[in-house]
Length: 250
Image: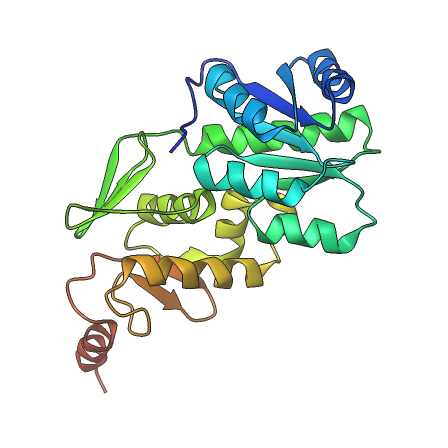
């Protein structure tokens, strides 16, 4: 698993159709005060650039890139680095595909310098907002924010970057209900505060991986009308609910 590099400087790797397009975008980001390096969409060269440049953010210009979906999916699957896609926002099916498959954002190629800078800066700020702070222990679950690893009873669990970000936010607020809007904005950004279907989809994926019985979750509980809560999971949710009900005076 490729990991995010040192965070003192925020580096952006630009992957484009060819050297000229990638260099032009990297130059554009440089004018905005960001450290950017260009590479082409050849899979081998792109992965080599990820390993050597150690970016904090990857920007893929999908225009003209042959089999751009496969390139995106491979990098997404083998790294925990947020990926932003630059494309044509009028192609709604493309926009939806990238966002549903884990892109941190999809920005119009025609976006102004101000919008491009604001959107990328917002993502980098979210990275800083969830800066690694050691191992978060919730019952038998361990969320290692520094190494981007999750273990259950000592056994590693493989999560996608988006799944990990959701679990980390929940673990940072263990025992407390996390609202839909808060989770969506912390993981996907302010523009996605109303996209609850994204969250439901990924909560289902997480339960498949961390729960003994995803249909009867013990760790990742639904707070109806609010959001979700991560708990230690020592007892089934139904038993806990029944015990709470008995404690309430008639």
